Length: 121
Image 1 (cartoon, rainbow, N blue to C red):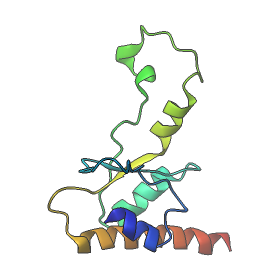
Image 2: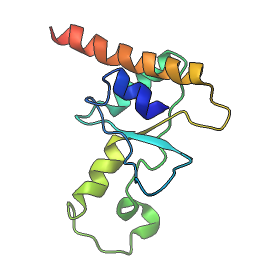
Image 3: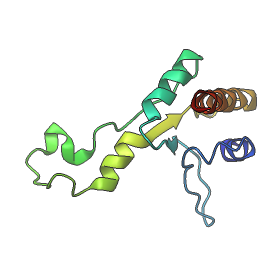
Image 4: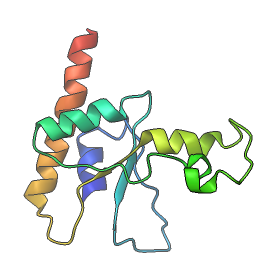
């Protein structure tokens, strides 16, 4: 439902939705969107201020974690990994999530981007 709701609200132009494999069925343990242009943390704060939880599960790329300090990786050699760590935000998703709750998440997301458009005008 998220994909349909986010596309219907025209929000998919602001962030990247998860990729779907037409040959598979996903059960969505995490529903991760990629929020570009350094807006992820502001979006997360906006969601929280409206009572909508979100999560950043992997804020530090593996090659930058202390436990992998022994692995030599040149700075900047994994730019997509670093970009993903800075952009990914996980929206609420769990088996009992009601359609009305997803509609609320979408509404709060819409409010964030509408506010940005008004501020830019």
